[in-house]
Length: 500
Image (cartoon, rainbow, N blue to C red):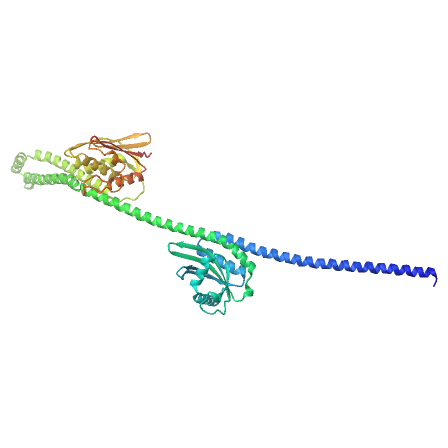
């Protein structure tokens, strides 16, 4: 072989070795790249799984948070929590109890994913059987010392050997302490196999516990506040009913006090009318006798007798006096009618709706009812508007004025004048009731509207009259001012808004 051919072969061999080395290097680089791709894929899968886990956890937490705050009651919050934890953890059965320090439970709730009634009943029976086997005293001690989620072997807290539920997770949600009673609300997650327990998810569940506890405490506070509101409304209804009874009783007391005077006021015109009717009966008899000849056959004798009777029986006087008797009787009966009408208005139990009324008419009716009280040693001077319209309740306002008038009369033991004045002042109707009595000591003025406060002797007053009058005036949006000077008298100034 020539030297040139030998050189050519050696050159080819060197080129072949270079190609083989390059191929081997490429294979190594390809293998390394493939390995890197596989490792990156594993990392990507792990990251994806981690993201999915985080998304699941985030979805659980955000969903639980959103729904928890929207639930209307504590029972609904617990029900939602049981359902969501059961779906999130997948494997466990669960229930909720309120456990007291006397080793008894006062509340029990559970959740099952099954919608078949027979399965639901079986599940409930199974949970209750497990619950009856638990050592509640020991569980309460564990929860009292450790307020965090705990994984427990069921045999450690059971009075009997457990074959079905091997492990449980206890999630304390809240603790209540009222006087000597302490209560723990706890969710119990039950597992048949330890492999079913997902520690990561339980850690997520523990992170949700504080948020849920806050929501439960808030809902409990809302429910307690709502119950307090219900109790206050019930107490207010009782108070309103009591106030209505007191108003009625005070009104009856006023009627009792005025009864003798009202009876006297009615008796006078009634007696007068009865006397008039007796006289009218005699007059009619005389008229009948005088006119008797008219029933006979007409003759000169009967006409003569009729003329004679006309003079003898004094028929002109009888006719004239009969007119006066009838007129005075009508006036007397009108007086009785007015008194009865005023009494009817006063005694009527109205509703609490304000309506247009005339204060002047109310004052006149009230004075009409107490007029007999002022008949002898007392005098009444009035200066009233022709019309004084306000929004009010006539019978209740009448009760106020009667109370003020009677109190004024009682303050003037030796007699005196009651001044009643009504006038306009801008947009107000002002009523002033003044007596010439002994006055009210300054230290007592601030107490006169206090229920049961009275300076009268025992048996002479309940101490409710002015208190009830004040509440009625408040109902009428009226302002009350009391002016009093010792031995010179007392004046009540009432200001009402005029109704246009």
